[in-house]
Amino acid sequence: MADRIDFRDQIASNKWKSLFLMFGVAIIIVLLGYVISMAFDPGYTFVIMIIAIIFSLLYTWFSYYNSGKIAVWSVGAKEAERSRYRDYYNAVEGLTIASGLPIPKLYVMQSAQINAFASGRNPKNSVICVTEGALQKLDRKELEGVLAHELGHVASYDIRFMTLVTVMVGMVAIISEIFLRSLWFRGGNRDNKGSMIFLAIGIVLAIVAPIVVILVQLAISRKREYTADASAVKFTRYPQGLIGALKKIGHENRVPEKQVSKAVAPLFISAPIHEWISTHPPLSELNSFKLRRCLS
Amino acid sequence: MLIVWILVALAALLVIIFFSYYNRFAVLSNRIDNSLSQIDVQLKRRADLIPNLIESVKGYMKHEKAAIQAVTEARKALVAAKDVAKRVRADNQLESALKTIFALAENYPDLKANTTFVELQKELTATEDRVAYARQHYNDSILSYNNLCTTFPGRFFAGMYGRKEKEYIKIEEAERKAVKVKFE
Image 1: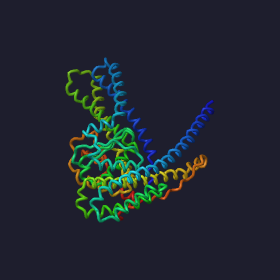
Image 2 (image 1 turned 45 degrees about the horizontal axis):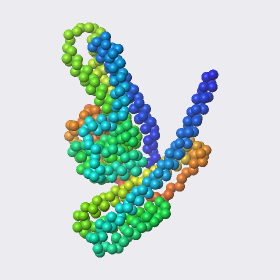
Image 3 (image 1 turned 180 degrees about the vertical axis):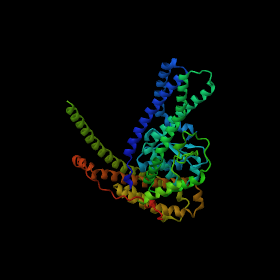
Image 4 (image 1 turned 60 degrees about the horizontal axis):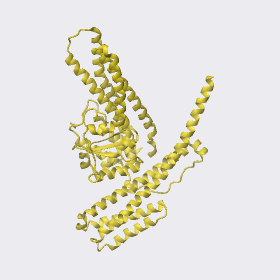
């Protein structure tokens, strides 16, 4: 079964999707700029459009090169010291030998829950972050399973696409929120019909944009998790490790994690926020899927 | 005129395909060499740790001369072995000798409280894991190379570039990792 997982197609597809996403978001930002300028003062459209284009280019460029750092920073993770987290380093180094990947930068995040995520734009510039809780509550094999799952995301370039989605979508959400909030302050003192139409479009955009992107993200995420699990088994040759870890996660992570923002949540192996649709497959289903996969 | 352009495009496509297959063979073949040397790196690292272990154990385990001797000899064999396959076999020997030492260490509470010893034990276990993973990666690399050589269209290109299926050096993956799956 080892060779059934070939990363090449996945890598290519993730790279294309990332490119597409970056273009898409850049265009959405420019469009939003247009709508906003029309809604508020059409006289400044030209200036606002130029600003929007420059901003969207800068923003895309910045997110591409810094998405990993942003993700790590947003959850308040610290770089893991080698002397203190010896087991963590040992496990990752072993797995990078098994997978032929470069060693990612390792981070630790303050949280009693068992959780982990991977991020970055490519394997050479990747980061892996685990919670203190994961390091304390998981045994060596279970931790290895979780880390192998994250390395699976690294190997397939899931990290590039997923981090870009979370960082860029997070921004769309913020922009739309600001737009909506400013509507409250404007009140209804002007009754220009054209402005009202754009206002309506603006509101619709502001509501729809983040939902659409989140839906896209949810639609793709499930399969990614399965593949990452399969990669984890390929790297460790020991499915029980990951299964044990997932069981412990299912047992322990009942209370939602508060310090993780909604935008970053889907990056984690166990989604820290209970949402109306869960990004990761339910754990029982996951276990059975994995077992089936190992048996075949 | 259009037909010329189509032909040019096709020719370019063909060249790209030929190049990409050539590179693919080269990359996979390099990966095999690389993973083989990775095994060696890890074995050497392991061998380098042994003298320190012997040093820390000697003072405590005065009555276990034979067990200590076995470790020293296994290490000697490992260092002296000529090729990787032999080194791996020597490492298996070393592994079982070490297991004896660690089992015996249970009888010496002072030794078990010694931080140097505990650190070394951890380190040795970690390198053993790494050796196992390096062996696994080596086998995986050979497998993907051979799959490319034996399946179409790689098979066609393999013939053209004179690439042949590679023999596995018989390096078994560690038994520790045997997978147990419950049938339901």
